[in-house]
Length: 408
Ligand SMILES: *Cc1c(COP(=O)(O)O)cnc(C)c1O
Image (tube, rainbow, N blue to C red; front, side):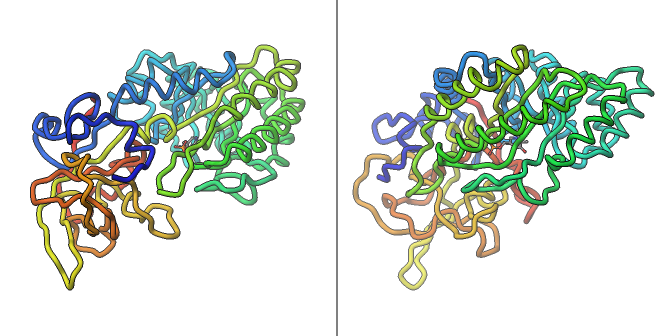
């Protein structure tokens, strides 16, 4: 079998992959239908423990809920992290249903509606403003409700983070306020009836290079401390972003976060604490907390040979796992780690293409992959699917039923 590190994170009992200690066939019986997503809570817990062991003690860990908003997952993580970052009213509701206090919730994202902003002010969460116009709307909402909005400003840095899978800062952006526009904006904020807390910066996603992430952190901290000098009130909140990637593909190397912890420790001690002794400082992670803890499980419906190529046709597809089909932000299509769930130790392999059930050639889950010979009824498992799964997929496309999700 492939030695991809994400597969090795799960136990194998006999010939069978086990998720949360439950053999995959038995789990499928328990769930009752395929396809489904299974998330392993132990793996999430140990991931958080690992991050904590590396981060300075006074750096908070926030979960970016959009990576996996399943309520049970959010409940589980809410007990492990310090804070959550949400990007919609529904995500905010999911977090407010946990034990996390509203003061530990931040709401970022461009294009927040007046209804969402109103809910966020009423809830008392921190609203991360992404434009000057949001400040105007928040003033109106605050006046109407008689509540001072708790706000932070998202900064679009004046530099770019290299090698991010998705770039969300530097250059022109729909995200945040350009660094050079921030000082005059802060002067306006000084007049507004807000509880101004501080800054947020998030410049990119899916980065596997510790050295680049360290450099970005260092530059972000320098930028934020410079801007803190223009702040109307002492800065009490600094969200330094994240962007920690996970290894989706064969040649990807897992991110080593220990240099990041070390850099953060130095930045805290030498730069942040001398200037902002009491500010809450945090990083915010999505896929790094949940992505590797999840698998997508789909059953072989058909096995056919076309002009020499073996096709395994499964009951799932890109309508549940768009990213694994290569159609979500990949430039060159590459395969996610994949296995036959009940044949984990078989060494005789064949080359097959695993295709989904949608009537489109885009619905390709494994292109010429080496797998043990799979029969109709076998379970195919796709790894690295604990983040950006069903909620980042076109679930209505072709009208098949949604995938169930379980936390094991
Ligand atoms: C999407 C997003 C995240 C999470 O990104 P990951 O790559 O999953 O870690 C964090 N913060 C903000 C502001 C985001 O938009």
